[in-house]
Length: 145
Image: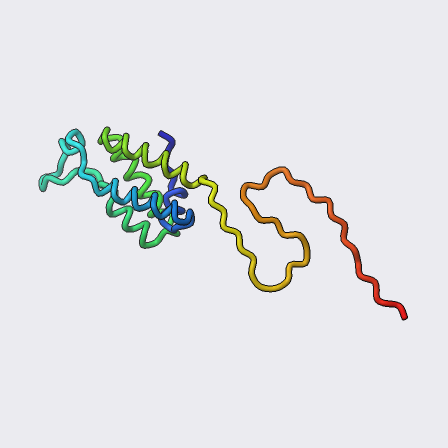
């Protein structure tokens, strides 16, 4: 499984990926709310709670402030630790991450131009690369009478 970066989690939490990002975030939230697998719960504290975070607190914290890199890193760490201890969670997290990555490059494009007059060419689209524009600028000459 590719590592889940703190930056990717922050972008999802902030809704920067549009509707697909919001759906991915909801999927992650539902995933971390699942109970730990049996193997992971063998190491418990005196009150019976797992010794590691489920990720729920970190998800809520990052959702509250998606611009905080420390919160994003805390969630990435919690997910990694839980995945290391819970094989079922690791598989489900890997599947979620693949879907999240695929949906972020789904091809949705929303272009908008508003206000004023555009004084030159305007290009709208997605994923432009290796383009060259050869444009000449003409200067207006005053009318001669």
